Amino acid sequence: MKIRIKLSVAGELVKEADVDVADMKMEELTDEEKENAVEIIVRDWANRNLHIEWEAEPEDPS
Image (cartoon, rainbow, N blue to C red; front, side, top):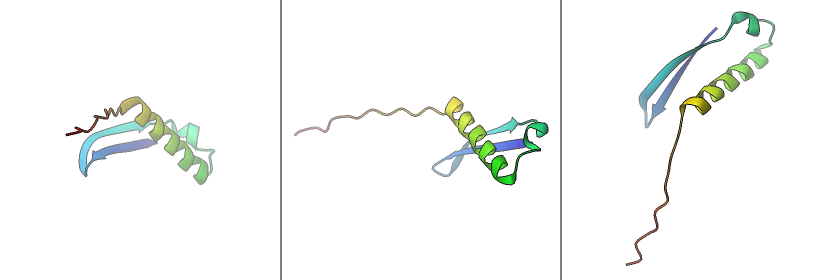
């Protein structure tokens, strides 16, 4: 099974990736279990590939 992941920011496609999963790992799962497994795989990909930084800046008191 191939899972195609598309990452968009503000509606603009930023990155695409394909994740291959051995069919034999999925064949005995129910449809709900497959859906959950794909969700976990996509979340794992996101955790490895996405990084968001932010910095709070104090407001100017004047």
